[in-house]
Image (cartoon, rainbow over all chains, first blue to last red):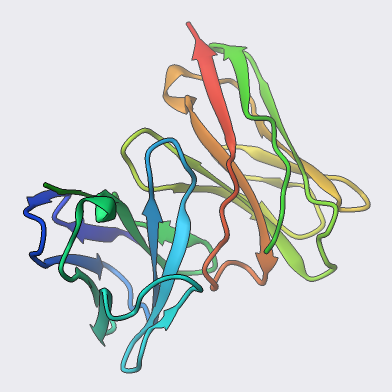
Length: 113
Length: 111
């Protein structure tokens, strides 16, 4: 149980376009989900906390207008990278809490050309 | 930020026990100690967590020092599939908040 699914697992887009990443809790409800970003050979960095039915909370230094988060239901949060640029290329990972530990999706590798 | 100190990398042989250390000298009395691991190109996977007492589950054991300023993750019999980056994290509560990841320990398993 406690499966978190991310889609797509990888995406390539052109500079200036927007990309949406979905994060679903498959067998539990998640009022809160978390979005992380990981650059090659680095650790995960928490970007934002996604709250169902309210605005997301962004970590310092993360542009909220660039990384749009929507958590419209108890099982779905989406991260939209708007006007993507090559420096946004990264591994994006979502997570949700169920019975204490965080459960993570398998990540989305974004490449912006 | 919740700071932990872990060795950058460790190497072990297959089918031998592995002890992964973590120092967390700034931990408070109500912070839980969490361990996650991450295989290449995958999201992190929960391993174990605890507060004060030693903890065991099907994946590993967690030994927590009496002063709680350090802990050790024990893999009783390493397999090649245990090769991963292991993260030790402490945070308030059992994990309902976003966790702050450090650099972790890259565990290499030799066949």
